[in-house]
Length: 108
Image (cartoon, helix red, strand yellow):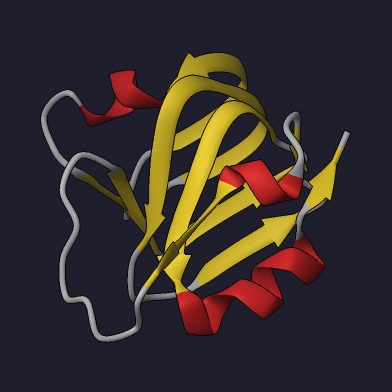
């Protein structure tokens, strides 16, 4: 199982000091701050009542579905975000994931 965080303010990049992929991260009532880009990797992810500070059209980074790798982003897989806020955090995801992401993301 991965890292568990609650009731904290965390710089996303500080969680990736020893790895480029956060697998199994469970976060509740966490304020994630950037600047950073979070790459959604294969696996499961749950977004429960999360909020992004920036407009949705500026935070989503569209990746071609045939592209197999990206460099420089913090990868996340098998995650659960509950009542978290994201400030100055972009999301890189495959083009096929975008419609579902747009439905799930609330922008404050």
